Image 1: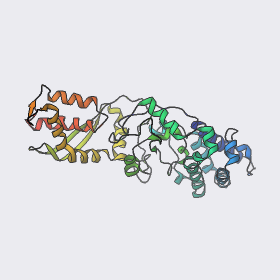
Image 2: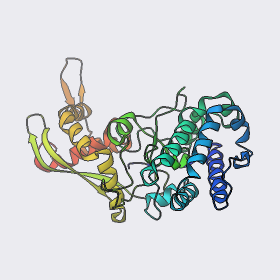
Image 3: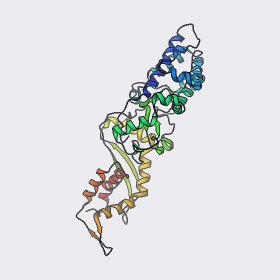
Image 4: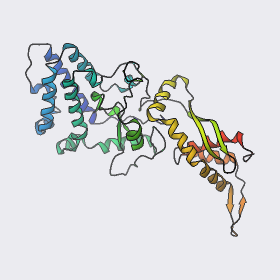
Length: 347
């Protein structure tokens, strides 16, 4: 992950707490002989929305009716998953596990997934919800204003929407809602992400585990963490065209200045296919980058010819460092640093 947002609490966090209240209530009822639905399962802050939204009432009651018929083991899993629903950082560093809906009976898992899906996608569109919690774009603007991140924090390749945008940036459920529904309305699990990362690469991948059998956990960057590290790129096995300094082929290796974060880096590379994406851009655009470098060092005069300026190779790299978060400048900088030993052009 190239950058982290600063977490900003929101009224939306109350909504997740109200669902924790609901799951606690139905769990402790299940320890008795009583299996009847009770409106006291609903937190008083959720009551105005519950009273207005037929769909929400239906989904909550469906969760309860399937829950009371499930095994004691399933009930305990659900209860613990609800309690840990906002502890995204501990899940990312593998201190605790998240509950995949596949680890529950099908009826319970589907009912819980349907509830969270509705509460994320449809409930926020209702007037009663907006009157109490506002809109998701308000949450996005608070994040954007606190961090001033301009590019996707995962790839660094695509811009995210500016503060004055009328629509919010695409939110990625860092732990996919389709797999881990208990985090579906937790704002610590919402990360502004470019569409390419979210839809073309991560999509609904199970970022929690390294293998399809879900037996090997992997560490993830916590999107709102306070890490202190630098990411650099090494280009290996470079095939360079010396006529235009275009890299025809290479391998990309991503290095992290903090070796204790290597597992997190490996997960980031794998989930978002970072090496392949960077490699493709470098191979496609590197000849144009050399032209940009030439334009930087020269000045076109009135007769159409070019004259040299006092600017140097190091000046150009410094300019890329200043604008490293935009226009693929971090890839350009890596390109020039890695090809310099292979050519006399920069001597």
